[in-house]
Image 1: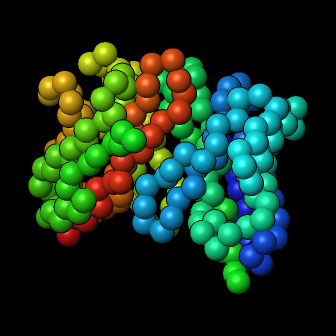
Image 2: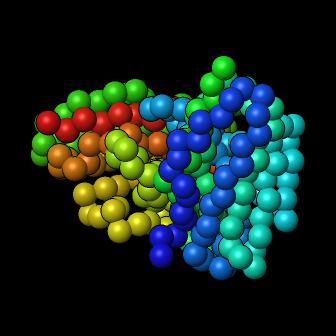
Length: 111
Length: 113
């Protein structure tokens, strides 16, 4: 099983709609989780940290289910500028806090 | 807002040559990282660095790679003898004390010909 798995998409989303997608991770000892966004050929940019069961920041909601080892991201009222690849990232405290990245979920918001 | 910076933005080198990629982490950060992303693939961890020592490294980070913090601001990644398969985007990241969030620089695109 891959360490961090994501549906690559693309998720084609009408502007103003809601989109949600999941990520699963294999290391049950993982302690902290993040969503980063990556635009084409750019660096990953931190979108949200997920430490407890969930986190909300404006139109973005992340949820963590430790028992099932998945994290989800929901985007409400999608904007054209939300088009990007969303990277699910797991932090391993026991290994120098190295980040393990999923392959990303591509989201395309269309007018 | 403080940012991680990296130079150069693009480096082209011939196979077998040495390259040094440079990073300036966010000023009060203490933990430094290098990651790479081969075109079309996921971001991969290379090495973490704290208190002038490597704290963790991946299988990718073999003897051809080294890191250094030569002064109080720069953090460098050296590849001694580049191979074609080293062609990738190399990202530097840094993390502040008491936090887990890592902030990434804009990357250096390394092309080995």
